[in-house]
Length: 61
Image (cartoon, rainbow, N blue to C red; front, side, top):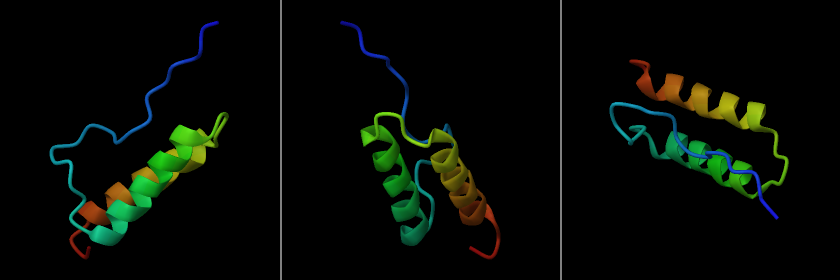
């Protein structure tokens, strides 16, 4: 039997670090949750990761 394969991880970025421990933990939690859910809410976790990336790259972060 074949299993479906999909990538679960951080999007491509110039730096792997978010610059904030809190944002890193949020993003990491979303990645782990998505990886272990059989049919996880991929869209919601992607939203969390994108929002985390935006906050981390904003000047006020």
